[in-house]
Image 1 (cartoon, one colour):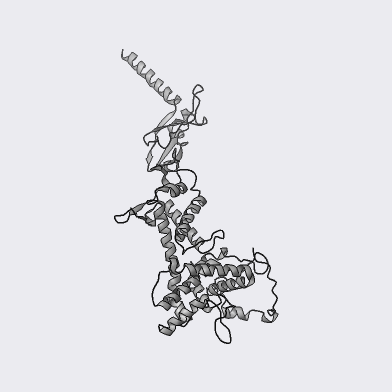
Image 2 (cartoon, rainbow, N blue to C red):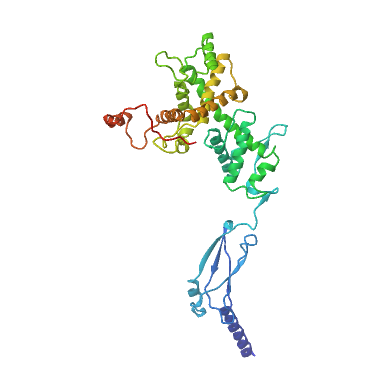
Length: 422
């Protein structure tokens, strides 16, 4: 009886060994932070059980306690034993976070990347935002929208006609910047995306706070022109805090000569030299080329010439809008000086002056294109020329000494400078 029992046990053990060698091996998938490792052990499949694909659950279904079927090359025999088979184990790393979700995530009916963190102001319905409290995607979008709005304000977008001092002018610049940036960043893909939300979601809690935030940045930027003018204008125009000084400021405003160059003999303003006054040059340098991040340095590559061919084609210019902002700031300080009062650099206080100067500059561009080019190029060169010589390392004296002055032709009355862009 004992002999029969021993034979039966031996038969069961042999059958179990055969089943283990013929069946695909199973291993627990180890847990490793946000990743799982699927180990595939090479094993030989019998002819009636060929290896099939290894199926993997989707990220939403995957748990780290799941088991994974392992199998593969027939070159490794099951008879080789577990040590030989272990030498052929391959670890396949799967990053669950990198697998895209089955569908875009939504928050309140809008795509998740459109989410805006707002906070209520006081007891009313006003809301505001903080750029630092937003997601990385929203923070980047707001930053690019501000850059776009500044580009419009400074005349770097030739297809726009901004009116920063008119009623709602800055709001229009900000809204346009938001929508154009959304389109440029591919965030206008459908009814649930950012561009649609800016146009259609609740203004008080979405587009309104965004527009207000950008407008505040534009106002702060414009204020830098006025702050510089408060220092530059009284010195350059020799204004005194007396009745005579206020009368002088009033006279400059009335005859609109404060931006004109002066006659060499008399020193009086010369209407034939608009925007050639030293105060204009000093203000351009103080506001537009103060440091490396100032507009004339930051955007130098995009400040092209109005001449598209000929020797002037590569000569950069100060855009008319930038120059109009500069001269409007001079006007604002003269107005304050003549009234002995302080006014905000916005709205009706300066809108008329800004529009007048912009019209005058555009008229110069059309009627006297060479004068306009030389004016704006000279302003650009004088303002940015004060920056360090970063490429060749020569001093100004060394550059002058190395120049072949005798070989340079004298200026004549004729100019063959090509034709300006129409």
